[in-house]
Every structure is written in structure tokens, then in C-alpha cells.
Length: 178
Image (cartoon, rainbow, N blue to C red; front, side):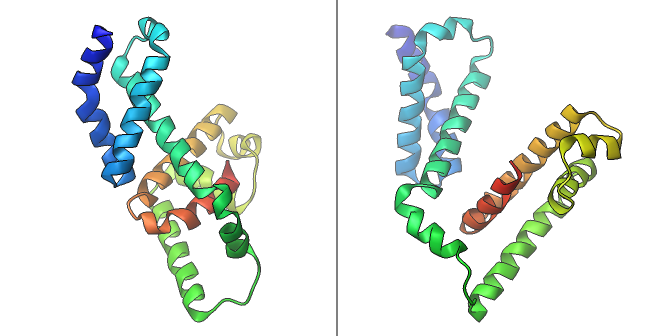
């Protein structure tokens, strides 16, 4: 209990701060930090195996934030909204403009990717190539292709998170590439 209290006292501010940067609201950041420390408590018997506690804490934080975002976006209460959002219908001029702006924002984020990440992403996205096909075309390994794709998606996610208003549209778009 004393060791846990020391971890809590030492890392609370960092965990809460990271949660605040990721969630943008104090209430959600506090909930996230509490969930992280609860997870630490639940896994306390495994902590002796952890070699780099800061990295371990970061991975827990990242995974819980991803779970929270995924839950919020794809929650049952959003089902009707998602169904209506993706249903085909005549778009109003405002919707057409919004889609164009979102597409431009995504394309700008893609242009910011390093060359190799952008190549792999575009081959997968534009041409629908498999990782094996991408690897052959670019003379890299299949594992490298997969790694570049993951890095590209992470970079795009980071760029899009700068503007949470566009997060929903781009998240749904990027989910097609997982």
C-alpha cells in the first residue's frame, strides 16, 4: 500500500496532465487518471516485471485514451447518428463544403507525412494494395510496410487530434485502413 501511495503521489500530476492534454476537459482527465491508477492497482502483482515504469505508464494511458475515444465515437447511443451520417442522401451546400474542407484537412495531413510513410499510405489507400504487394513494389519487407502504415496512421491521428471537431469524420475514414 505504501509503495502504491508513493507511485500515486509521484505520478498523479503527470498522468492527470497527460489526460488533460488528450481529453481537453478536467473532468475526463481526472476520470482517466483514476482509471489508470486503478489499472495499476489491479495489476500490482505484475509491476515487479516492469523494466521501464514510465513507458509502462504511458502505454496504459495511451490505451485507455484510445478505448475512451473508441467508446465515445462508436457507442450505442451514437448508432442512429452514425447511420444517418453515412446514409446516402442529397447533400446540402453546407454539407458539401464541410466534406470538402475535411477532405482537404486530411489531404494536408497526408502531405505532411514523411515520404516513405506517405508512399505506403497512398498505395494502400489509393490502389488498395496489400502489404505484400506494397513490399514488392517498394522493395521493402512486409513487416516494414505494416510498420510504415501504423506509423502513418499514428501521425495522421496526432495531426487530426489538433482539431477535435474533425476527429469523427477522419476517424471513420481511417478505420477503413486498419
